[in-house]
Image (cartoon, rainbow, N blue to C red; front, top):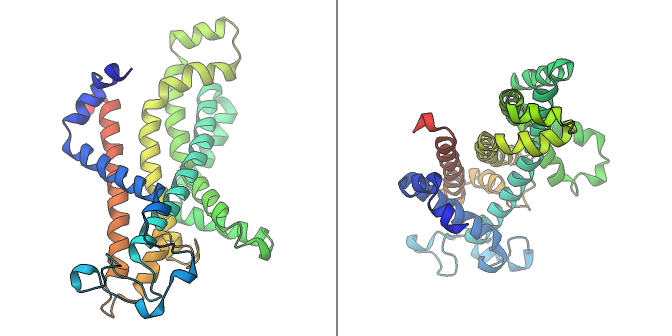
Length: 300
């Protein structure tokens, strides 16, 4: 298996693409740091007992800061390295969860619409067209507001992360649905699908075992693009104060906190999380561009 993977066209292109190699390296480092945050972070940013107000607003080490805090501290004395690692962990958790829900919902509706067509296809695509007319951030805000209105007040804080994940997922499913529908239309007319229909296989079996594996290429590209979009949506909502609270240091929350110190000279509180978020999103998008080139030979 490894020999086949090593000799594949995709890995051959990867070895000859410096941008893809650099993006993959950055993404793996960030993902590894986020997964290993409890062991790599110098302190736990969720534990108030580890904070010391006397350590507040210390600059990064290269600007004469304390050796204990490589990237400095915020106004509460929270270590920025720890906050960023845990923030990336939370942002990636929300991004992957939202992307997974959006992909399952969108691909299911798209494949079914492309296979059956008719009224079901018309209804799904009209809903998708209406949602495409709205920016994703407005859709997420609308869903988040509806959820807050329906849920009891005592559950708001406990269900804030699941509600945020659901709001982001329901704002991103359209890309999966439209791509899956278009690809299914093409595969539906091919001989192997017609043969499966003649053999009397159930439509769900045909869609799951025959059509879906053959349309995964473009869907993988959409997954990477929507993962970056989900992370940005979470950061935007948290920056606006609608996503996660200040005691849950996602990357968006850290940027919102840093904005308060933009003009006071403590630049690191804002710019370090911002640059970290930019590096994460750009690396994911570059990986998506590489996958698009792999699965579409006409782009090579």
